[in-house]
Image 1 (tube, rainbow, N blue to C red):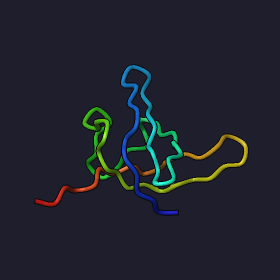
Image 2 (tube, rainbow, N blue to C red):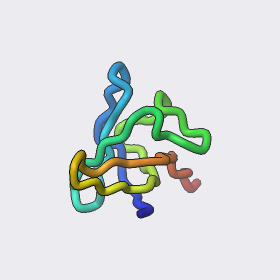
Image 3 (cartoon, rainbow, N blue to C red):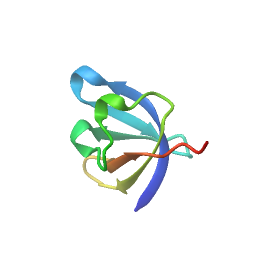
Image 4 (cartoon, helix red, strand yellow):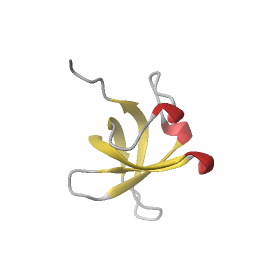
Length: 73
C-alpha cells in the first residue's frame, strides 16, 4: 500500500530508522529499503518520504522502497 510520512529517527550506525505516519504511528525501515537514487545516509529527520507500507501481523509494519519526496520550489 503506498504511503507518505516523515523521517522520525535515523540510527546510522545500526542501519535503520523510523518513519512517522500521519496517524503518529512509527514504521521501521532498513537502509536496504531505500530506492530510486535515495541514499540512506542522505535522509534526515523531518524529510518527507514516500514508500510502500507492508503490514505484517507477526513482525509489525515496515516501510519498503523508501524514496525521498522531491521538494517544491
